[in-house]
Image (cartoon, rainbow, N blue to C red; front, side, top):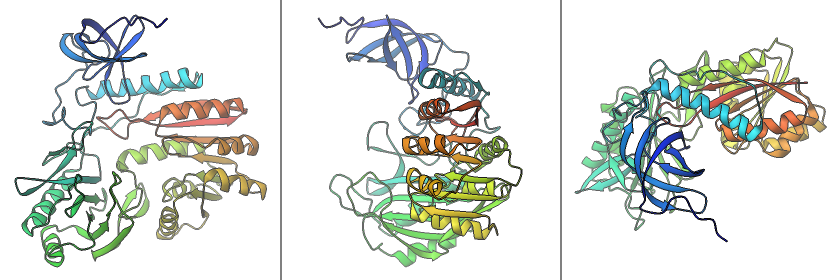
Length: 455
């Protein structure tokens, strides 16, 4: 016999919000049955309408707030409710720090059965205008180019002139490039019929150097009036260092295609995290919030506690960001990354900083590190910074077999962190502490660094 649900579609009920989902919706429970309702905050009492019910959970719409959270604020962005870029502008920054700390602690306990010290979240003194990379989809409206963000759960572009989490210089450059392309008759890409030219404008800016890269991403191999457009960009943007053309002629949500060429200037721009210099290409993975990246990496260094005699393995090393920080304190660092171009960038960044005690290899961490281990390359300390899906199980088993004295786990997903810490703890490690770091203010994302030692 099927279970009778405690609520039905179109019911109007009074609820209390208990938590937030990963996309910032409020969570309320009716007789244990979860309802997900946008724009609710923990502790708030509200009248809601049930709009959809499934077997295990339902969705609602907020009708009236009867008791507001002391952390509720008015979102400063005029398109906040339509745009999908942020989820927490209606929550004060103090409230955001608390909710992220609670989320990390709850997930570690629930998924990993890990009871350890979770420090308060390290936030930013100024949690706005932090992103150093803008990727703006381009559309057309009344004959002119528009650019902005996709509306939540749609591919409808909302035009915008300013994004409050982008560096202001990036907003200004996107606006100028959009106007220049419009002036010379560049047509926007039409997703529905796979016609038109300009798909995205990407702008990257070095926070410390101020150097700017503009990337024009088109469906077509050629750009109309290309030389005139390049000349105007160069003449109008004083800090421009690089203009790149990327071609993506596929029907896809992926932003960049396989073909990339330099239209003007250099192939890369440079920036610093701490005293380490990085060359950043159009396709390089480089943290979008370098100020907080420095905080994150300093914490990873603190947890590694290097004395200068250690061999360190850096799994998922990317363009060598953490590896190069580690190499300044370690005897030798070995970095591994699956993306060949990232390893090329990593080697170039090592040369750029005159760092020679680091070796980089292309491949899957779960294949390369076991191969190193079999050859006798053992690590005193192992650092992992995996993608959102977490570490591959083969890598976790290799760590357990290799038994490095310490593991420093840098995570962008507390749920997979909790799962992986459980495996490592079952394999003989103890999680001493976890430090959440707010890399993406106004969103639900939170990064963490965990310190583990071998029992």
